[in-house]
Length: 80
Image 1 (cartoon, rainbow, N blue to C red):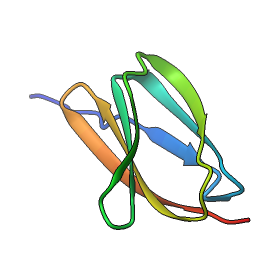
Image 2: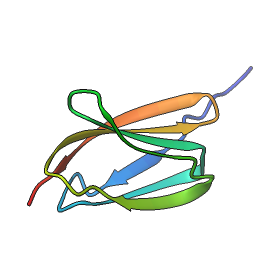
Image 3: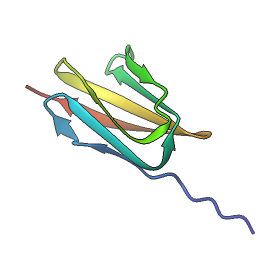
């Protein structure tokens, strides 16, 4: 019998003034941030469990993290 344990990724804070933190139990292979309309804002090959970055514009962002073959996406708000 095979058991698959989903990678746990935490993106915080949910609403921020621009600094976004990401943590995981495993090394994050890639981080992609897109604006609400789909424009790619930030991309990084993290290769570590924790990462942070700054978003300078107010808005709604989708933060996608990839670990191995699994990608998860979370919504985040940046406000003044």
